[in-house]
Length: 324
Image (cartoon, rainbow, N blue to C red; front, side, top):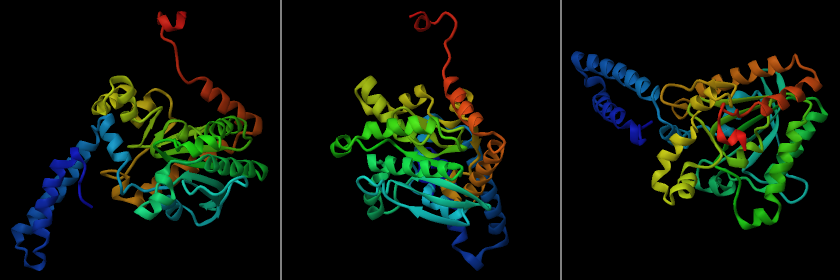
């Protein structure tokens, strides 16, 4: 897989040298074989060094990478069994939100997540991951069903936001999101939410009111896309990188702020380089938190979720905003 991101140019140069040598195949001389091993080691070290110091804007680029694993990819890699459930029983089925009964390591859960789509046809079918009201109502239907049968809920968040088109607004987009927030806050079963790529605006939060909120190492979570924030603040999307840094959209910053409960490590060079390894780490984290939450009764689950989100945000001493 090519190193195609802007900040990966030094890695791309190393990979080019390595590929040139590897193409010789059996014709390689002993010194060239040693050179290949040295280049491979240098590539690993350089990749680890670069990815250990990513800026918020660089994390945005990794989170949006076209080869990054999506919800359906994780379902195939993590679940022994999966039965998809479709439709909101009001309008139709939204492929931007997919979910159903899943078995993870022998444990049955209700798994719900955003799906962006891999090729052009699937991207159009899934609206690039921009869910419509029927998508959120489908998610709500599945969550209520999970509560009815006492099943834990796992959500995988990966969207730049909810669909902003006129038809979605006419069908009650804001109400659908608000209803999800209200119902999720009171669910009497364990809820684990994981931001696996982009976590944007209310479209992400509609699946994010959980007992545990986790993030993959290079995922992002933000009230608005950096481009949108730059357009609002500076009237120009060219300042998107500055907006990303100011908003602290990267997982490490959000973890330090206490908005995220755990960071899930990604394979060297990002989840898009090794789907299987990324899925293994994600599966282990989900199971660990489900085991911890299993010790809480229904009332404790609701109370813990309530206290978690009530604790978000703090006033600094002497802050003028606090006085107002």
